[in-house]
Image 1 (cartoon, helix red, strand yellow):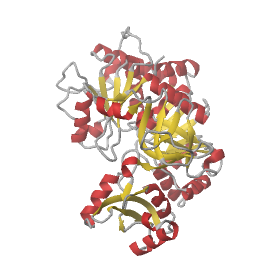
Image 2 (cartoon, helix red, strand yellow):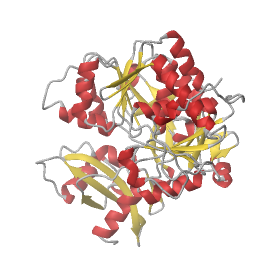
Image 3 (cartoon, helix red, strand yellow):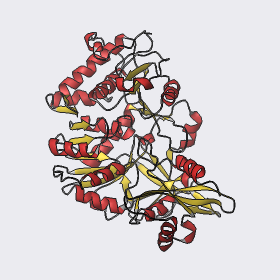
Image 4 (cartoon, rainbow, N blue to C red):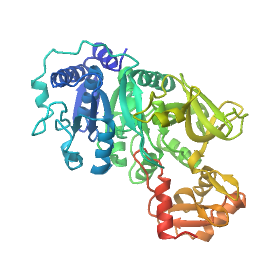
Length: 507
């Protein structure tokens, strides 16, 4: 079994059904399979085979999907690259991964590391040096029925996905076909997806969550709609026009859609499933979300690149009852909480979140030390701090590296952020620890204010003191127009620290 088998099955059962929609283009399952096979044949004739590393640098498009499935058929390892990175950062990842085949979109040409051997439009080829990149569409005219004879199975590598790197350098996560197959089964069981689903996928394909869902859509013979870039108005328009039934995106995106809805009444009644993930969603935002999609069931997912990414999920029955929880482990996943000594904690006690299952990564590419550190005693150590309640529901407290130790006491930023976001003038907030001569570290809040809602540092700190123990409250507050986020919409805390120390100065 390999990931191309999903497309093969969908093309046989639903040949004329729309598989992917992007802008004005549509492609059926039958045509998607045919083009993926032709592309695989052309690539194979150029020497691209099992184990070759192929990079993709592109905005979301149908060609991206064709390329992924062509690579899965060949057993080639796909390296999706974040187009928001600089040319220098992309070059670094390409060299680290050993990419010799490179697919890229013309609009991103200035970011292509030209000193690697390439092919073009979305593609350039290593192993066969060319003076000019090869246009993507020209590959289809050179296709034959020449395919590799070797079998591709669950143990073979499918992707190297670089982590977003909120606190340090990105690492290349190796996921096998088996990891992605199990992630697909986990998602399918959690969402009860069917061939009748039409899912809007506005998040970028270089992100592990979107990639994992692509295989879930194809496995379930659903139709999915890609967006080149996220726009709240465009997404609401697509939902109304295409009668979208399912939607998955980050809380920041939902927040923007809620704002957009105030300008016009969009018809969202077709949506029966709404999934959020990547970062915590406040209780207030969850309530507003229910108003935006009145006919939908709601899910909140906790995942990591290293888990393919699904770890736990909470559904509609508990979405507001356990409003701060990210649910229970997915189908093939086990979760536990360990203390600093490596012992399992009792219910309600905070510790590091560990998980295991066939969806968990093979390891970090070219980094045996980091692999050994993360995968210990059969468990992946996530670096996230959390707790499990008496009913088995998981709660995220924050990143292990983000814990603030002030005067020898642990302070979890998530607790403070939860209070800050409830202030009527606060639109967004994040909490960091910065060096302090007396306390070791002090709590600092970065705050984005709502339009026409002025507020002072003193007011914010006073509000926190009404709801938190004094040692948890921010000692300083700085205001900013927006919080720095990576491609996964996670706040980059290191950048926030740099912003504070540069603008406010160290105490």
